[in-house]
Length: 475
Ligand code: FAD
Ligand code: NAI
Image 1 (tube, protein in one colour):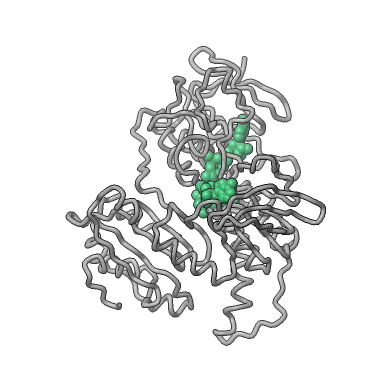
Image 2 (tube, protein in one colour):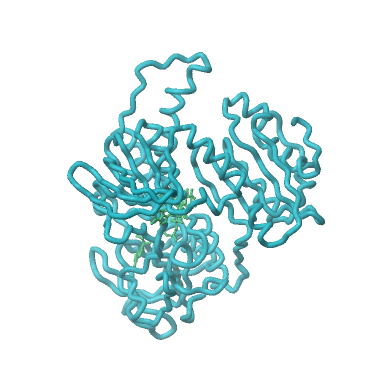
């Protein structure tokens, strides 16, 4: 007889492993299946985020930021750093160590929570008495049965039609995190989150970086004022970003990659680069899951169809994270994983899509929560805006990083915070205060009246809230 579980989670990324832990905490007998392999063929749970996403990209951003500081910012502090060089192999090895620490951490958490971990591919066999039979293709093949199934199989990088990733010259996020030497010329298609983060890493290390973006607007989903400020900063750093291009034929040869495109004026152009990163979005992943075996419904994008509670069309089958609708973010996947485990336990798990923060880990960092000014205008909402520049913040001056600002958008009548947008130092950390405030339906005045430590970057948040009522104290 096959092993029986209350809950089987397919996929061990942030959506899956967190769902498994929460389900185990709630007293269920839980299995988690994940197929990711490390370079030795062993298990490497954590999914895209841990292996080729959030964690390794932030490790490289940190290393390249140190290099950039040593080269360009130490001098102003009176520090002489001569002969600064970057050992790329060592940087990559450090990144791999950080990834492994996270893989091992998750394996430890599985043990701690008594979750049965299966290393291999999970696929639906059939609906069984009170649940589903799942085949695990790992070192050995076995069948396990679960009363409830949570699918968290994530997403894959989207390739340009006719230009497959070879991960040597034409790179997805995977190859982009493993370039063995600083390319002289690096091209990127798509100036979204990956394009900007990866472009920043290799630009800081000395590559000549050009990003080709299809849309005429830079960071269209970001508040216009923030996008404008960020574009200015990136251009000043030497990132070349061409908007409104149409990418044509791509030739991948021995010497590199040649990209034919038309620019915004309709002129034919060619970009010749040593490496090309294609970062044009991601597609939901159900490869090998065998959804047909049980009649699991997918939409036209290949995403698993779910309702607001992450229920699929099949009783007892749930799906969370990148494989379903909504933003492809690790923390969104985690929140859905927790909520589903709680719903299985008969509780009222909830995910507030209005307060999911976004962060782009460039320099300056970009972070936001809630609606942008252009969205409020489009929705016909009467609002007040308040903005405070880091230039007027003492801590930012001491840090030597005064780019950007904090911007509050509040309801014109009730003063409820509708959106907070930050471009500048530590935006990724500062945004949390805004998330908490919005979750508690705070007004801008609430933040304006809270004592913030001095000197701290968070004072810019308070001042931006004060700016909504036109009473900044330091500007
Ligand atoms: P995944 O993390 O993709 O995990 C899915 C797992 O399921 C994988 O391990 C996969 O091998 C496994 N799997 C798939 N099918 C099967 C099967 N049939 N059987 C067994 N196992 C299976 N998000 C952020 O919030 N912050 C960031 O800073 C950030 N940075 C990113 C940087 C990059 C370069 C990329 C590419 C993404 C980044 N993301 C970031 C997005 C984030 O990685 C995803 O939103 C997140 O990983 C989604 O989690 P998930 O659990 O849904 O899927
Ligand atoms: P993205 O959706 O952020 O950006 C893709 C960009 O490519 C868009 O600007 C789009 O207009 C452009 N594009 C699409 N097709 C094109 C074409 N044919 N030619 C030129 N431009 C084209 O996707 P990206 O950067 O690949 O990242 C995927 C997802 O991964 C993100 O949306 C995000 O959810 C997640 N991620 C999150 C990070 C974070 O939270 N810091 C970091 C990296 C990724």
